[in-house]
Image (tube, rainbow, N blue to C red; front, side, top):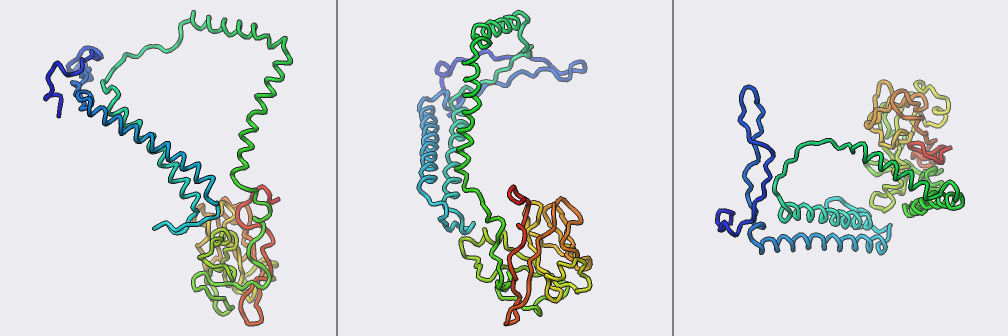
Length: 352
């Protein structure tokens, strides 16, 4: 149904919203005002039943938003923060994070969709143009505002009522602490867990690709191998948390090419093991240049020299990659001889 099918007497009264005389473009005035196009009535403007339907749709969207917000609160209070669920095709994720994200997303979307539908179907869609005009207040208005402010400051007697003034400032200064206290709900402080990984004396180095323990002969000169601690399985709930600290890259160099004395002492037959976590923002390092023995972080191009203690030679990284001291066990497998002696990854407030 269109406005042409409705008797003229049933149509809403038109308002005069012209914004100046309609002009005709010519050589002297190539940008003449074309005027506003004729207003076309919407079905909601001429049919009250359609308007009621739009009203119910908007109310339904707002109601769904309220229910989603209640669902958000329930999810935050009821779902354990360590519960994992499988969501195709994402995989295993935190049940609480999924529920909070889903309910909050629905709540915000429904508010926005309801507001847009309300504006497009029920609010006035008549185009109105207004001439520009100065927004600065006249001089007499500004003078009156200044006089009123000075009069109010005088009547408040803040200069004489020092007790009220000081206690008010104290209250205003302390009340933001309530919000600061809520930051405790973000989670427990990390304590010392960022200083330690799963590597310990006797932990075998396991190839990330084959999931098999590594022997020295498995690492060729010039190759780059990624390893994890023995016992860390990919299907475990703590895998992502632990591998983010324990990921290891192994490179075999000619012993004569190793410049750093400690690096040589901590290696085994030229095999050196360094943290794979970049010391800039924690990206995984994966690019190795065989001729120069440099490794490159693909995120921000921090470059480390693995033949010289993995020191930074380019990029924004602040310090060298931590080295893991390695050896071989009685069965000939590569093993760690302890944990990293410094925290892996970027610097943080407890690093010291």
